Length: 288
Ligand SMILES: C[S@@+](CC[C@H](N)C(=O)[O-])C[C@H]1O[C@@H](n2cnc3c(N)ncnc32)[C@H](O)[C@@H]1O
Image (cartoon, rainbow, N blue to C red):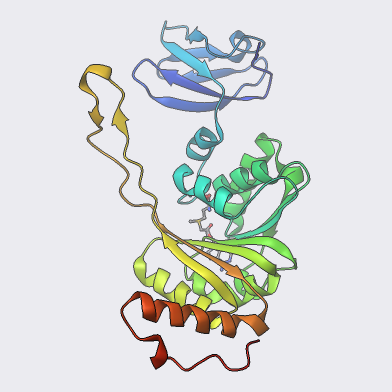
């Protein structure tokens, strides 16, 4: 049976469905306008039960998922939403042993998802320019016991990254396009790149920077999740959804000597796909 342990993060859900993330400290209490809930009432009790405040208000006690942690941890910045975080973990191929650089750290929401994905032997090198944001992220990661997997580095990404041969680089900072050369320098050959940008103009800037570098397999995506009302007799989509968070851009770094060759080939294919005549494109000269 899964018991709540002292210092664990716990998700409390009110009868109206409001969600709260707390860290249960022995001999302390959670104070709310719905009353006081002593943590000792929860510690060593199984998850999945209901606890009551001294005013009789009831809360369901659940173990938070990574998605809950991202959404309900303390925030100092906009965060990467779980739908985008999940896609990034998959497309950046993050798993045990991988090394990834991210900039900026922000509130550390995505950092925690990355750290969980690469644990126990991988590592996240997270760069942030604003100390007040880094402090919030550090506190969040400490509370979750994830600091062994993460180096928090206070530096502007424009100054470059200390690590080389990393498996992946992710940029979530304004004007990410400016940091493409730094990302490329840090990546291993065949390394995976991703960025999240909120507006299409910024996406175009990143695309131009990727085309100027040694990147291939360039893609742009937008993830939309349409929630449904889970009522069997009146099953239909919910009235509202989160319509926009950001655009995801993916690419892979390859050896500079092969990049021109590959892009020529891709342009040739694209011309045929879109009705052009491949003979209008000069033939490849001398292979690679
Ligand atoms: C939207 S937030 C990142 C949110 C983060 N991914 C999360 O999920 O919590 C962007 C962060 O990038 C930082 N930043 C902006 N420009 C930067 C730069 N040039 N180098 C490092 N960090 C930068 C900002 O201070 C901010 O904390």
